[in-house]
Length: 93
Image (cartoon, rainbow, N blue to C red; front, side, top):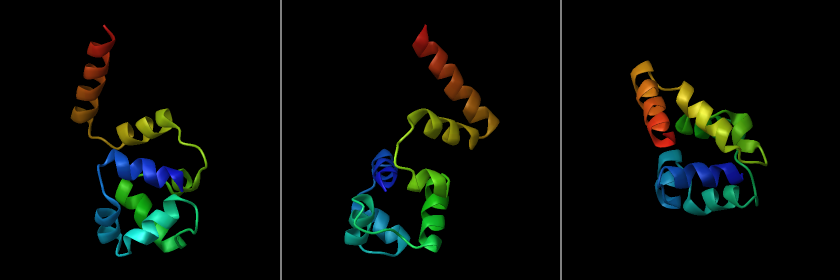
């Protein structure tokens, strides 16, 4: 689950911090990230909900940054979304 690693790092979470949030060990998180084993479906759903992504995203073999950005943007309230779009356009000009 390479995408779990990307999500964890994007939130500046250590293995231990994420493990504590999910009620597992840091070694378990490491094993999931490195593909040695996979979480059960209940834990996959918990992880997806925590990071606000789909289970499909978690188990996908590829990281798609544009899809991830879209997923995160669509979960924002209208005011936050507008502010981020404004910042993007300002950086482009």
